[in-house]
Figure 1 (cartoon, helix red, strand yellow):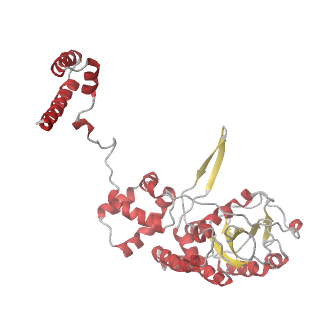
Figure 2 (figure 1 turned 90 degrees about the vertical axis):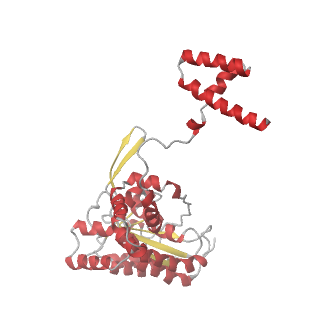
Figure 3 (figure 1 turned 180 degrees about the horizontal axis):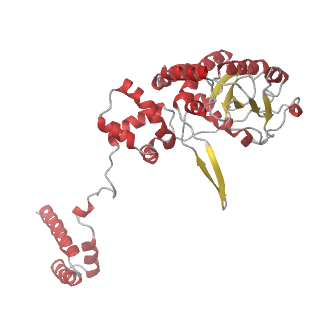
Length: 384
């Protein structure tokens, strides 16, 4: 009986609350007098009880605005985002048309309603849908040691390069040393074209001049355009006679420049690619087995490079200006390196045709799976 009276009391309280909150000032005063007389509550305490929301009001209401409609395609978006190396919304927005035809080959046909939503989704909506999937990134060590022998022979880069002209490259090296630069280990070399963002990566053992020259020669042979200029930092792997002779003793010498010492922003293009290429792929572990050089080079040339250059769009800075104490930056629409090369109109017809044929033969999901297959045995042999 006590339990029943307690439940009845709660129900009565809910009725009083509903009546109290629907009345005006005079009606609330009369109902408050009745409530206090019946239950013998203090007036202030009674006001507190009756002002609390009713159970009907406490039911969670949907947030204001239009109803969410992209849940039906969120699985598609997340799958492409994870396979496409976790692009930001603006880059993913431009990548979706490249990936969706291949998605249907691997995961089945999309419904017309899903395809319509994927064509409508904006970059900002993609960022909101993927907000819970974001991950933090670690930092690593710098292994550049200055080379002084040829420093006076190579000018510091000034405002002489036309960044709209295909063929001007920046190059840099990345140490896979783990937590210590002592001893022998593998280095990655990154080469990126300023105009198209076309990037190539190679691995060498201990960044000796012979290995760097061999891989630079291999990169030049694989590029779909001629090298016009070559810029690098002050490291001894670049400032050496072997590489200088190769790049300049030819019918049309390649124009060479170097960055200012201790100014990483002079090589901003390739420094950014250092994260997207060796760091994002191989991480920060130590690779100290010479037998891994060839597998890493195969991974760069046959899977990681095609995936980035053909299917992962990037944005380029168009202009920037200062507003008070901060910089405001504006970027162009995200495009892949392949799209930028074709849009430039600077490729010879055979080279452009060869690029198109190669693009048609590629499948980004197969490339991503190949990256995973080749990467696992490499990372198993990595140490902290």
